[in-house]
Image (cartoon, rainbow, N blue to C red):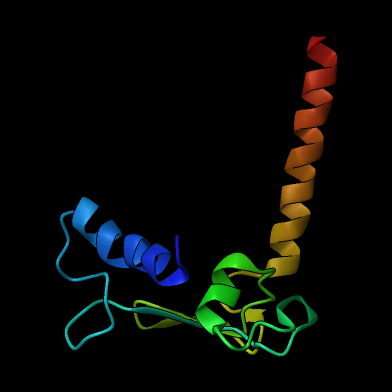
Length: 106
């Protein structure tokens, strides 16, 4: 499968499966999510001849910018919608609770 075929399945195909005509393409009037990813990372070295294939089939570096339905979610590599250190701390606490609960049930 080519990168362009995979992209079409993920975008237009996904919209068709969801029976949505307002997503799946970048066009006026369509809901759009956009991300930018720096292509000068070591995980993408040698892949600049086909950036789409590089993003689908190679290691993807940290997203530089992301806009979801008109709202900036990532700006300059920083998540804007949540307090990430607090979220990571909460996640680690919950993971620890799960491990401890699993130990006590066995």
